[in-house]
Structures are given as C-alpha cells and as structure tokens.
Image (cartoon, rainbow, N blue to C red; front, side):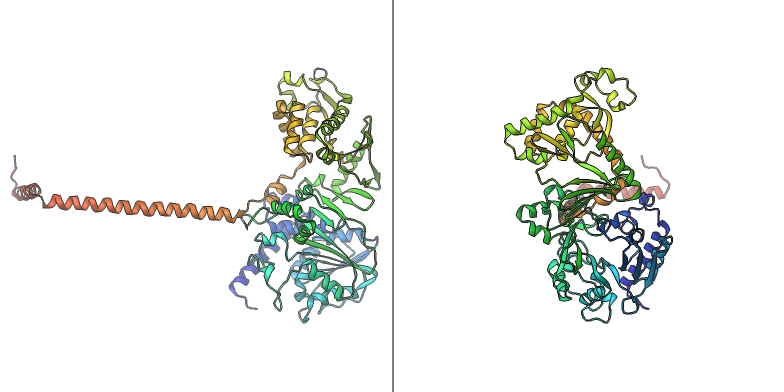
Length: 589
C-alpha cells in the first residue's frame, strides 16, 4: 500500500499512539502524570465511560458494540451485561482492546467492516458511539451508508431493543471555535463540506432526525453533551432547563497551543440569554436513544465531577421524580458511603435531610422548588437579609469559642498559626458541614431541606462556612458584598482563602483541571497582537538601519572633505617622507 506524505505522517503518529496506549493500559491515572496528551487521555481515561455509565441498561443485556476503538467503554459494558460483541475496523486497535480486557470472559472481538463480518444474532442494545460519522468505512459499498448503518443496527435488535448513538454535532460550538475537522487537518471543514465517497461526515440534529425517521423510527430521545460525548461533564435532554451554572461544567479540552477564536463558555452564556433552543443547536455532541417503545427513559440531566481526584468522582442523575447520586468508579464508592454517614449525623433544628440510601446509591425526591440561593437573589432586599439571617442562625446553633479548643490536635495548623486575637472573635463548630450552604438547600415553610452534604471537617470557624456560602451562591456581586460587610468576612478573608485552597488541594485532580481541561490555547487576537509586535520590531529595525546608513554616509562625506583639504595633503606628504627615511635607517627628530 502506498501513502502520500501527509498520510505517512498520520500512519506513523497512529503507530506511536498505539504503542503508547498499549504500554499504559490499566495505568492511566499514573501515566497521565508524565503524558497529558489529549490522545492518551481519550484512549485510556476512565472518564470515557461517562457517555454510557448513567444509562439504565437492562440486567443481563446482550450488546453489540460497533466501533470499540481502544475499548474505552467495552470493559464497563462487560462488567454490567451478559455478553458483549465488539466489532472494530482496525486490527491494531482490536489487539489493544483484547489485551486491555483479557479478563472479560463475556467479550468477543471481531475485526472488519460490516460487509465482511457475519453476526447472526439479535441484541438488547446496539452501541454506535462515535461511529456514524465513519459510516462509509463500515459500509464502503453503500451509497447511503449512514442510513444503511442504522438500518442494519435496527435489524440486529431484539423486540423493544435500543440503538444508543453518540456523535459530535456538525454545528457544535467547538467547530465554530476553530476545532479541526475529523481528520484533524483543517479548521471549519466540518461546517461546510459534505462527505466524499470514503470520507467521514458529521450531522446536525435535524439531519440525524431525518435519517432516524427514514428507517422507520418515530420514538427517539436526544441528549446534549458538554464539552462533548468523549469526555462528558454534563448531559441533558430537552426536558431539562439548562442554567448559567450548568455552563460552568463545560470544561473544554484542546491540544496544547491549539488555535481558537473565543472562549466557548462566554458565548454559551450569551446564547442562553437569547434562547434555550439556540443553545441546544450549538451543543458540541449528541447522545440519542432510539427504539420502538413510545416511552423513553425519564432521565433528563446527568452531571459528572471529572475535575476531582478519582476517589471523589461521582455523578448526579435527575429523573422526573427523583435525584440519584452514585460513584463513577469502584474506589469512589467509599466517598458515596461517607456522604451517607454525613447525612445520618446531620442534626440541626429546622433542618431536614432529603437524601437516603438505596442499594449503593444516594436517592432523594426531586423537589420542584427554587434553590435557597436563587430564592435569595430573587427576593427584595429586606427579605434577602432576613432569610439569610435564618440560615446563619442555624449555623450558630452549636457554636463554641476558640479558647477551649486552641490546643485540640484536630484543629488545623493553618488556624493555629493565625492571629489569636482574630480567632477569639470567631465562633467554631466541632463537626463542620462545609457544604451546608444556600446552594445546597431549599427553604420551605421556614424549614431548610438539605442535600449534597459531601464534606465535613473538625473544628472550623463558622465564619468560614458563611464565607463559602457567599462565594458559592448564585448571587450578584452587589449582594455578596452586602453579606461580606454584614458578617465581617473581609477581615479574615486571608484565612478563609487559605482554608479553601487546602480544601481544593484535597479534592481536585490538578493534572486534569490544569493540564487537560484548562490547557493553554492560543486565540486569534493573541496571534494578531504577536504579529503586530514583530511588525513593530521589524519597522523599528528598518528605521534604525536607515538611520545608521545616513550616519555612515555623513561620515563618508566628512572623510572626503578631510581628504580633499590642504591640511590633509601637507600631512600626507610628511608621512610619505617619513616612510622613505625610515627605509634608509635614518631617524627623524
């Protein structure tokens, strides 16, 4: 097989990536410390399974996975289901996937396109994750491969089976922002170019709906994923009203120094102000549930905490009538158990905990009311102050002074080293619920209903919890400033900032947050500024060159004048006489 130069580079890069992935299988959390490349993350990170681990798959299901890639979600499917057949186009990827999941006895790997392989079986689910865009490669002889791929999948379904499809949106914000096309060659290509015979192609929501309905399905449900289906931090349906706070979960990830046009979240916020339907149109990815049943599942919102250390990563699922929290991986189950312990130990007058344990999950009734911080923002100034005071009074129910605990070994060193005079003015609490803040409360009939009490700490200043309540609430800057002044927060803000930094250090996966989700990129404004800077330097250098040339010309003119002067001629004659006498060995006095 012959390749053009560009293809040779791509093939070489893929071989290198395959080698790197195979080397780091099962060890990604350690490997990423030395290599935070997007390619390695997308191949090996446990976050990849977030695209499906929220979905209520039937027990003992049989699954066909079209396009397993490196087996990013295959292991999860095997652990949950009866049998999994994974089909992959690339033999090298299939080898890596088989090695990665060699302990899964219920997995069968098949290599080849769908015109070459024969699968005489029906399934509860057919997964097409990131593959409809490559439909022409799966069915190279088809004139309408996208339609035929879904048609083939539908024929492989059992009665009431489901096709679960995930793909990028042709009009996703990241593609307007300058993200390169599917082959990573050109910006904006996905927005304007139709598929060539064997090329890849993205679709809009409208185009996908037309294909789905063409093959006979009337029942389907679209979800939207941010930042995308590969690394979802937020997935929601049209049944959920997305908020500005939700957009903060859109942790974009790009290659180092990739060229971008703008900050996505700033544009998303403006779109949300305009119209939610417009916002959905620009969502980066879709997840689609397709089936014959008239009623689809009732999940409408899923949020993930991907920025946390692995042992603290959980998901929040909102259904029609309930909210569920569960671990996204095995080691995070301990954190779920700790939250349940916190809930059982939380005792305050006029406060009710709404969450309870069911199996290994945390479940609560979905309360259709305004969160307390949103209520505070909408209230008039008098009501705002009065109701916040109700919350503060609950915090002080079990208050203790600093002196009795100043030598307690459970008191943080950061607090012990702080100004004692300031500490004596504060009140402390033995079992501090750091998440007992307005963002995690409802106020109903003068009673607080509390949820999301993930974190507790020993002997913390109540004023620090008030600080967290203010900083982490959906309040305007003006209202936050009113509360800061009322409760003298600014006086001890240096302590509270330090405590917050220590808390975040304990919680956050700094590699994921800083080197992947907030990787340094370059925008066009910076490029223009850099070009202008170098043009200015060039102009300065050019001007200096001209100035020096003028100086040289002036000096030459002065020399010419000297050479032509009478004095110079006399001196030149005397020099010649001196040389002649020196040659004769005579001294000139």
